[in-house]
Image (tube, rainbow, N blue to C red):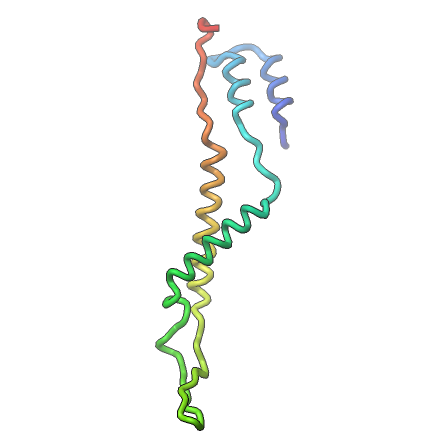
Length: 122
């Protein structure tokens, strides 16, 4: 069951005080940022840039050079006939960058601190 900030505040205001004052709890509820429902175009662009940068910086890990196959053509040119791609490496790079991105979002949301107010300070 989801509860909105407004419902939570109303429940706090109608309840009796406990260790924390009602004002402390309301401050805490108000400091919680609601999570975005969707991913913005900027977020997608940021993740794509990170993934591409990671792949560009480690391009030697993308192709399995040990298993490449070559042929000499009729005019003595060397041609690559097979260059297996390390899809597991690419998948890992994508997963790692997405995990980093999710961690950044959580840090932004959890940035507010709760400081309890003593009842005698009010």
